[in-house]
Image (cartoon, rainbow, N blue to C red; front, side, top):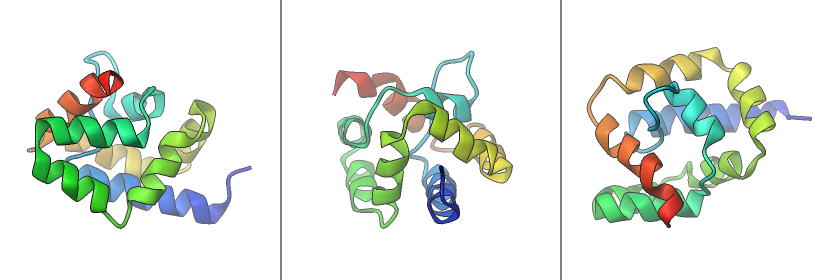
Length: 117
């Protein structure tokens, strides 16, 4: 079962990270939120891929106060990620809207290449 506390933490992480242009990217056929839910990548892989694209952004992601919660989100099974996002539609809307804004190219590149790290 997902605790309210962990859901709140993850929702905060997703919103903050999306604003920071580091979290989401993906395949043209998937929404950004679906890409995050379905990614096979771990937090370590996301950080490594971000460093490879932009060292400053990689360092910011690794040092983020939200890093632990984001890592926990990515470590959760897909069904649990789906449940977390399903309970937080505002976060899903923010993530999806983010992809029309600045920084979305870095995020898409990171998620497209993270499996290589």
